[in-house]
Amino acid sequence: MREGWKMSVLSALFAVSFFSCRDDTEIFAPEEETVAPPEEPADIRGFYLLNEGNMGSNKSTLDYYDCETGIYHRNIYAEANPSVPKELGDVGNDIEIYGSKLYAVINCSNKVEVMEAASAKRLGQVDIPNCRYIRFHQGYAYVTSYAGPVELNPNYEQRGYVARVDTATFQVLDRCLVGFQPDELEIVGNKLYVANSGGYMFPNYESTVSVIDLPSFTETKRIEVARNLHRLCADRHGNLWVTSRGDYYTQPSRLYCVDTQSDALVDSLDVAVSNFYLDGDSLYLYSVEWSYISMSNVTTYGIVDVARGEIVSRNFITDGTDRKIKIPYGILVHPYTKEIYVTDAGNYVSPGTLYCFDPNGRQKWSVRTGDIPAHFVLVATPAGASRK
Image 1 (spheres, rainbow, N blue to C red):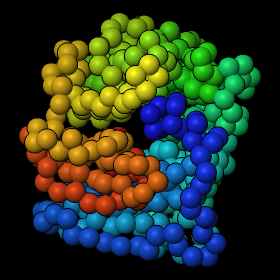
Image 2 (cartoon, rainbow, N blue to C red; image 1 turned 135 degrees about the vertical axis):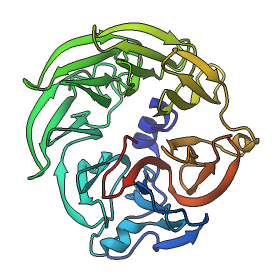
Image 3 (tube, helix red, strand yellow; image 1 turned 90 degrees about the vertical axis):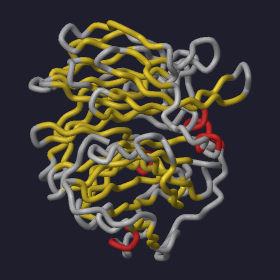
Image 4 (cartoon, helix red, strand yellow; image 1 turned 180 degrees about the vertical axis):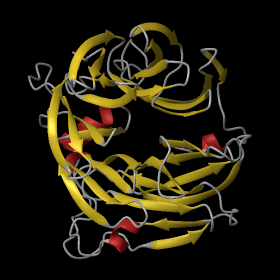
């Protein structure tokens, strides 16, 4: 989340909420705006964009961009579910589609919201405390959970876990303990990898990736990588790319590579990463890196060729638009058009912005979003999704 540990945890504990919860009225009125010419019907119909909303405000919202019409729809969850009193809830942290269902992980509301992928109509929820990220495998959802409360404590005692959920009944069937404050997860074959952050335990961050054997649903190994891990992504060459936030002092954010055959760390790249998106062999990334030494952020963009393990671009935005983006916060690459989508969280408490760039990094259009636009999922025809 925002500026890694610093913004996400401190805002949870100390920020004053400037917006009240909705009782039976909507926080935002549903809106739509034409932002691009209609496209020819293709395998990708559009994408959902989950807006996190500021912690404590119950302002997470869901937007939808329709590629076939060029129309951007804001706050579609409220329109599809007018009787839900608090809309999506407090901090939307992840979103995925599996089969005909859309799953939104709502971190501080301690739930996974389950909807129809085609309409965003509510089907139910899965109750998981301090839930973070979700992936799917053979009829099950796997969700990381911090398990304990939002609490800064270097001696935090509650280990996190991965919950196994039946996607037919929305019931939690089992739990597998991992490290402290587990974040993103990835599935490769019959193994599930989990990035343990220890983000609540400054300065005693975690530094390992847990390996879970899915058939037995047990942790079989911990791979030592780096401090304060966050994101995972598997490529088609058998590599797992892992991001470290660093410690915000002397250890910077970096990108690491784990061989999923040997489950060993094999490489690292001198590039800071807050978030990334893998398209083919091109790993598009950005970073907003906070330093307590300079008391400032440094924002960077880049592309890594995962086949060669090399940084091939230090900025994929070529027209200067990057100077307008205050806090890049989400990223997506269209698998066919190769358009690049980047969100801007701005000041975190006001509506953000979604930018669309052509494959050469030039801005095509931009549109207003909800507060803190963060997480994408592509919608295929019929309803389905690629990795966000």
